[in-house]
Image: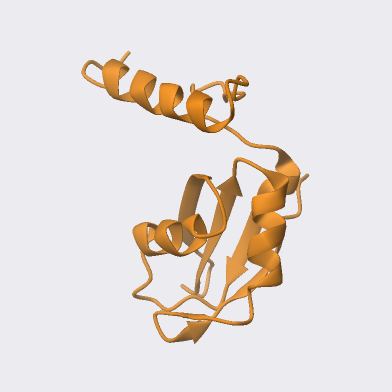
Length: 115
């Protein structure tokens, strides 16, 4: 167990609990909050300069973002997964996906394919 993160993790968990009207937010085996699979979006056409923080800020306007992860494919093209707390927030982001630019790029957003 890593020292020093317990209070920060419990604070995040308490905030999520409050945001979810007191309903328990499920957690992964690593203790990270996880939303419903249907509330996860795949985001492509990112600028190489786009960071996880930029993605989190942009998508937070649609609802509570539990996790934003930026990665690169074999050709070094960046893409991201964004996990929302609610399916409604993910659907809202999908509806507005073609109207704004992030770091000068029009993002391609779709529901993540869950195995």
